[in-house]
Length: 194
Length: 297
Image (cartoon, rainbow over the protein chains, first blue to last red):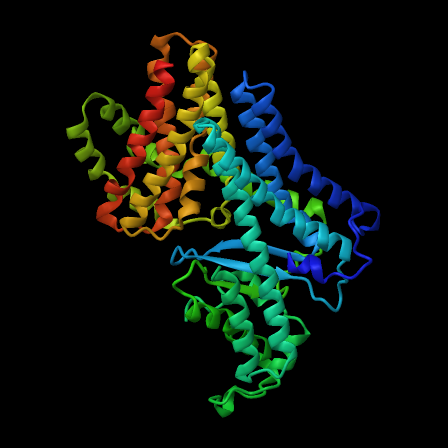
């Protein structure tokens, strides 16, 4: 959220200001559509549970993929993935970020991206509370899957952002002096201690 | 230390300008031979940058290793995937999915075993359906052969796991199995099968991990999910209402196909030789259970 607040006035939430309007609109479509299908399916056409379930899951998976692989790097120049070391079987997180000097990130894109990224898990948590309160345990499984997918993406991208700031900081400041590295490490760790 | 070294082939790609500046600062403990060798500048730089870049993440880990922080690494574009086109991303991922499907459609162990023994795992599998005790020993007796066939290890295509296969096959399986259920029980059958597949994959994976397999959790879930493909065919046959009697041989072959694919892919996961049978047994139970579900539906 702090990223959204730091943006200057030109970054108003209008898709016309975006430098990748198609990517942005597709991204927002996938983000919203899974929620809408779930809500309307739950309230209006509950008779066909299986169909709504499948559509929602597929939309969630597409949203996850699109955000992770396409929207993330086109809108804010960040990407993360998980890599497996075949020798040991350990998995590592790898974060990639665009060089800020060669790539100018549009403020509108950035704001849209981070707001959508953080709003989605909050909305699904609300729906989880509703599902729990109304004892809809079958629907709860769907909400749990949605939560896992959206929260994974949110955590990974916020971490990716911190990583890119931290390394950019450490390499531009006097390298090797412990101060910059401690500061960067502190920033990352305080973010994850929440 | 091994985790810091760049292991993937992409790490040898040239780094950005920052790395060149860093390279100008010589390490304190460097010997005379290490310094300013123009012939080996790239190979010297790679491990050096690896150490430096993971420095900040290391610091974070030691401070907060009790929290949920997961060790990671930041790569300032050694592999430049940030600026690629959408089509490049899509085609690479589709190719990776097809690579995994090929491994399932053409299980190495099944075909290798058939060539060598004339019956292979299929024969052992048919014995399995009759009586558990004797055939397990028979199955275990075959494992040294399996190890020989599987020595190739895991292919590169399987290193990059994804969950599209498990998701789609799990949904199809649940959908087909719930087609023949009664109107009132459809939801229960669907969500029951759906949950059972995921829980089953998780349990089998935990078993392999606990037995010392060198495989990550999601990688194994991904592989097991892809090997559900023959069982999806079985559930489709059930959904269109195949007669119970031809079901028996067809389903046994399909379960054997799944098992052969699962073993031949998971074979590279580094489970200790004597324990391969134990590690794969839950997988067998899982496939047979799903096969029975397809049969009775």
